[in-house]
Every structure is written in C-alpha cells, then in structure tokens.
Image (tube, rainbow, N blue to C red; front, side):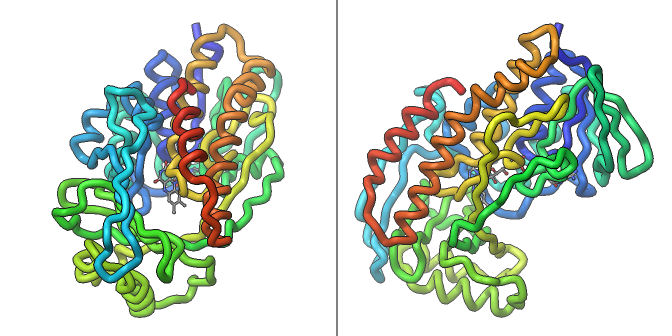
Amino acid sequence: MAAVQNVLVVGGGAVGAATATLLADAGVSVDLVEITPDVTALGSGITLQGNALRVLRQLGVLDECLALGYAADQLVIRAPDPAGTVVARVAEHRSGGPDLPASMGMYRPDLARVLVGRAERAGVEVRFSTTLQELTQDDSGVDVRFTDGSTGRYDLVVGADGLRSWTRRLLDVPLETRSVGMGIWRVFAPRPAEVVSSEAVYGGPCYIAGYTPTSEESLYAFLVEDAQDRTTVTDEEKLAIVRRLAGAYGGPWREILASIDDPSAIHYTWFEEHLLDAPWHRGRVVLVGDAVHTCPPTLAQGAALGLEDAAVLAEVLTGADDLDDDLLAGFAARRLPRVREVVEASLQLARWQLAHEQGDVPALMGRIAQLTSAPA
Ligand SMILES: Cc1cc2nc3c(=O)[nH]c(=O)nc-3n(C[C@H](O)[C@H](O)[C@H](O)COP(=O)(O)OP(=O)(O)OC[C@H]3O[C@@H](n4cnc5c(N)ncnc54)[C@H](O)[C@@H]3O)c2cc1C
C-alpha cells in the first residue's frame, strides 16, 4: 500500500501531470487543479534530453511524443559569418540510455496535450480554471478550499505550480528568483529541410542564436540577448527586433528569417534562477519542478529535472506505507545534490557567455551528461 491514498496536485504543467499520472497508476486517488481554462503551454518548442525521455517512457507516452516531435543525436555549431559555416558536428550523449535518442524537440502545446491526456486516462480528476485558495493542515491531512468554493481533504498536496508557485507562497516559503542577465526571443517557424538537429551559433549580436526541430514541419528558433525591459514592445517592434537579430546570421537562418511574419509566434522572456534548499516540504505539502528549482536553459534541463522529481516522488510515496516527515525529507535529500549540480552548471554556462569567456564547456557538458545518465 502507498504512503498516501488521496493527493491533490496543484498545476497541470509537465511536472504536475507526470506526478499525478504516476501516482494514479499506483492506485492513488488524484485530483489536479490547473489555473488556466484549458491545456495550455506557451506556443514554442522544448528540447527534452535523454533523462526526460526516460520519464516519458515510464509514463508510456514516449512513442506518441517521438511521433509528434523530432529526435536527434547531434548538435551542429555554426560560425557567426554570412555563410553560417559549420564549425563542428558534436555527437550528443544518450543520457537516457543507448535505446533512447540523445534529445527530442517538441512543440510545447503537443507535450502538454499528451501529458494531461495521459493523466486523465490514468483516472486523475483534472479541474481547469481552478486553484486552491487556502490550505490548513494537521497531523493526518490537508484541508483545502478551492476558488470555486468547493473543499477537499487530502493526505498530501503537491505544489507543481511553476516558477511563481502560489502553493509555495501559501506555505510562506521564502525564495528569491533572480534574473540571470539574459533575455531570449523564441520563434516558432517552419523547418528548413537541411536542419536535422539542433544548431547553434555563438557570437554575433546574440550570445547564442539557435534552433531545434520540433517536428518534420516545424522548429523553434531562439536568440539570446542581454535582459532588457521588453514589456511594452508592439507587435511591429517585436518583428523588427527579431528580424534584425536573426538577419545577422547565415546558413539556415536565412530561410527561417524569411518565414518570420507572425508576431503571435514570437515570445520574449528572461532567464531566471532559484533553488530552494531542503526541505522541499512543509508538513504534508511538498513542492516539485520549477516551484523549487529553475535555471537558464543552457543545458535544456529544466523540465527534465522536474520530470525526474515527479518520478522520484512517486517512487518514494508508493514505496512506503506511511507518510511522515522523514519520507518527504528523504525525497528532497535525494533530489537536491543532482538538481544543484545541474542548476549550477547551467548558470556557469550563462556566466561564461555573459563574460565572453571560453570556459571548459566540453568538460562541463561531459560531467552533466555523466550525472544525468545515472538513474535519478
Ligand atoms: C526560455 C526557456 C526555455 C526552456 N527550454 C527548456 C528546454 O529546452 N528543455 C527543458 O527541459 N526545460 C526548458 N525550460 C524549462 C522548462 O520550461 C521548465 O523547467 C518546466 O516547464 C517546468 O515545469 P513545471 O511543470 O514545474 O512548471 P510549469 O511548466 O510552469 O507548469 C506549471 C503549471 O501550473 C499552473 N499554475 C500556475 N499557478 C497555478 C495555481 N495557483 N493553481 C493551479 N495551477 C497553477 C500553470 O498554469 C502551469 O500549467 C525552459 C525554460 C525557459 C524559460
């Protein structure tokens, strides 16, 4: 028997949906509340590394994701010259194991639909446009009042509500989220036929300008600049900035640039970072995913780490008979060293780029590949 019989998951992102599914598969009754009205995710792409693919396989959705997405085993590095000269083709490490591709690009809304659909099929009761308003807990459970006026009592509440987690705030857990100093433009666009894996250009007007195929037809392109206040840019300005930045690069960027004409397919955000020290729980409420750790996507590991959180939490909860402080403390103790190392390495890469410093990137990448290859 699991340590919990009924659980509330707050947040229907990748981490919440995965946690809910794995618990429901083990016979736990799970409610999931998602504040948005529907399965939503920013209309951009995501790169899922081998350790994330391992969790997708555990969830039984890997084949569906691979059919929708675009798997690859190499990274192409190009020079910031007018021809976009290829300077290296780097074989990516298969951190999920030899039977999984090194990475997979995917359209975020596709991933969200697959994961929430899987949670619903597992029997998770998913409620949109709903969140928790307040919670009170005692030794045997958590009482929750929802924004629609309903109430519930749970053995455990899992806060998977992202970077600015409301659950974290309800628990009064202080955590400062800091800007890394970089901002990223992301564009969803058609895939030029010659782009068959992630490609990156270091230098030029951006720290990094790259793209990753997300399906046979599509890719997401990104341009990383100094963090700036872009909150008031108009659609026309958005297009002009992205065209100017992208226009500085050659090779497949030319074709991508020619297709950039829809401002609604362009998103801007800052790179931010935070990492909560252990414990990640207060009483019977535990936090996972971006709610406790976030880092610049320089290693494309944010969602991967969160999916690992989901798998480890489900394993811990379903492998014990009783929920107590030690069990949840053990969860964070198991996760924190690995998460800290990946967050630190992601930040180090960003710092080197900000300082225009070479740094020993291959050694850092090798260390993280080794780490993420081991079971979470
Ligand atoms: C620019 C950028 C690029 C990235 N690229 C990659 C990448 O290539 N690969 C990778 O692995 N990671 C990447 N990441 C990181 C990745 O996006 C996150 O780590 C991941 O989405 C975290 O998942 P999550 O489920 O914890 O949080 P989220 O994805 O933020 O999901 C949280 C969910 O909770 C909901 N919610 C919020 N508040 C409430 C509330 N009060 N009540 C109920 N629901 C609520 C939200 O609507 C959302 O659905 C990137 C991040 C950024 C910023």
